Length: 255
Image 1 (spheres, rainbow, N blue to C red):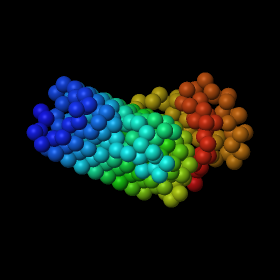
Image 2 (spheres, rainbow, N blue to C red):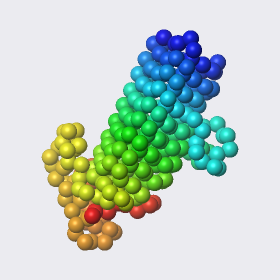
Image 3 (cartoon, rainbow, N blue to C red):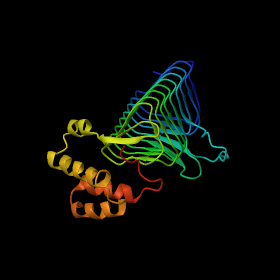
């Protein structure tokens, strides 16, 4: 059902069984997948919205980036199937640097969270209230971010990591880890999350060993990585090695 007070640009492509509430605004260059609900007073523009999403009241998706270099170039936001965007959350479209901001499938962006321009957010990510991800941040699959977290631009958060509430994340957080504090430091592994996802015990033990080598052995990082190369046949350990080697900001360290 589309409410009679909703404003919908003639260029918008609306799927089947889409609901658009009172006073919602659907701007230009928008496509909305089947079964999605856009609640009252939400604003969506320059965005591809997947199927069965929920965009709650007063949120803004696809609005112009808060980047002084932005000159009106045609960019967009992509939202995956099943993602929920709660009240007052904002997802800005990309800039010429990347062209798009991406939020994956089955994510939850809680009230007043912010995803800035050119960010890439993976699948099954939970971002709690009042979090802010600055431009060009990468958040991989299954990450959980607590309330009031700020993530510095160009920072990466690895798969299955968990960030404690109120953290200021200014360096890359390796996959499977927990980080917290100002500035955020590693505080161990996200073992509860790994067990919930039924990761094999052998893989968990290998991740524990890799963590000890990297952060508790007092080896220089390059030597620690060389030591872990012996375990590169273990997929999670290899993922950690690859993540660290790609880091440009440097990695968040153990307390």
